[in-house]
Image (cartoon, rainbow, N blue to C red):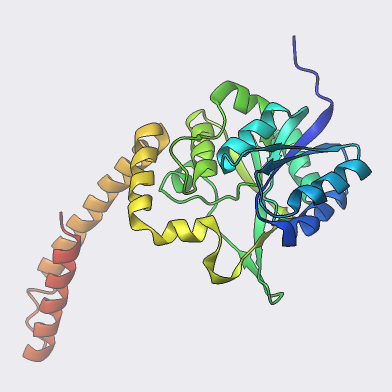
Length: 291
């Protein structure tokens, strides 16, 4: 028997130490032109007054709810929120980010028209000084997404049944980030298609002093290496495209080696000075990229 959904979209909002930004986030949800949604907020043991703000919004709006838990992290908070979701689609949202008023409408239309399996918005970064930056990442094709580079934001719309069928966020291996990237790769392994909806805008808050988890993650090379190893082991699509790129890379190296040997090492009509520079350059390149 097919599941009966009370709402079309369940918005999952984990909350931890975001009191200064929380109202702006929740107000952007209330201002959506699309109205068939519920909002489930998770107080992940936040030590500030965020929970008081959540209580206020839940009293005023029937489609808002929240629950508190001891601090368990982002992945567990999202999973716990999804377990309570009554919507057909899931839309995770960090509690310091902001949505354009038509964001959900465009994403829902894209999924409803069967254009894709996961609909993701365009990312617009905004800074404390009010500056906006339109972040144009690569298209979220299986090849691009499988090269240890997440090209979509965590706030993407997907069917709740994907979680039921393929599992939720990994709570054990990605304490430093990339739990959403792991989820997208799991969907790609199952042949799901991701589409960036150009008319849907998502505003990502760029904090000062590199406070975001993602920025701290990028600074730690050991964490990156460990995460990449886990992703390689877990996901067929990563192993497939990594090996494909390795093969293509070797072919390019062989071509370059042949080119340098034929047209640079054997040049006769150039001065000794230039010839010496060419040889040094070619040896440097081959030393760095040959394997």
